[in-house]
Image (cartoon, rainbow, N blue to C red; front, side, top):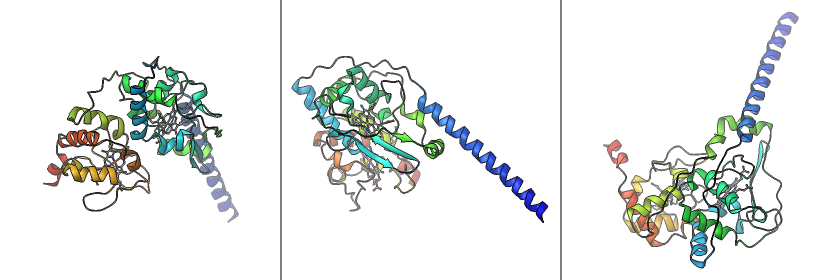
Length: 293
Ligand code: HEC
Ligand code: HEC
């Protein structure tokens, strides 16, 4: 009996040892990905700040839902505080604890369109791969506006990813996907209710969740709803589409959950912008209907 116990004990010991080694390997692997540095040459190096540019930047900041994560006035926000990690979206203002104090125009662009900090390391969770689609002109407008944010003193302890968090990230979060080192120059089409401008708007405001092809996919958190394919919404009348975006209500009367879709931010879209997006969605190949037949 004792012998068996001893054997079991030994086996358990080996198993525990293996688990510890595996966790250690995952810990180191995520650490390497988080500490990897990316060489980025920001295309925006100087920013004018005339009233037209500032107004454009302000509007973009609203519809690109920055404050959903960075908090009221972009003064910083604790997004998650759980045992595996504490994640903050930093204070973007020039108040105490804010990056606006030190960021150069190039630093802003590197963070915004490349997801990389001044130290060359990736900024996780920040949807830079989507903002990567911003044109140089719009990136400049956004940066011009961010530099005028009302300074707010808010010193937050930095993001901390603890042992378990690092191990979990191997399964939950592809850390490297948040960094986009290359610069792909984009010139945005003239704003107006056109398909082309709609395509541009979806690229900067919808693709992070609905996918590059807007076909949706599984939910991004176990407790979240699946992300819908937007071709169906293209088939709604414009009025119904507008109600969905502005009031967060689908044609069926069912609400679009503001917890998972930035409905509040999209309320700031103009009718022209909604029309442009609607026009673009109508031109997506109708795979949903094909699949249903
Ligand atoms: C989904 C949440 C989310 C949204 C939306 C978001 N951010 Fe972020 N952002 C973050 C997080 C989280 C970080 C910090 C990442 C880290 O520390 O690894 C961050 C980092 C940044 C940084 C770099 C800060 C630093 O300390 O280096 C800038 C600049 C920034 N965001 C600007 C913006 C702007 C401008 C917008 C809107 C156009 C925006 N963010 C939208 C979550 C978000
Ligand atoms: C942060 C993630 C996120 C972003 C960004 C986002 N959506 Fe969504 N969207 C969702 C999720 C999740 C749902 C499903 C919500 C639910 O089931 O309540 C949804 C639902 C919708 C619906 C309802 C579709 C249907 O068939 O029921 C429409 C329409 C929609 N989104 C349009 C857009 C448009 C247009 C944009 C860009 C301007 C956009 N979304 C950007 C996450 C997002």
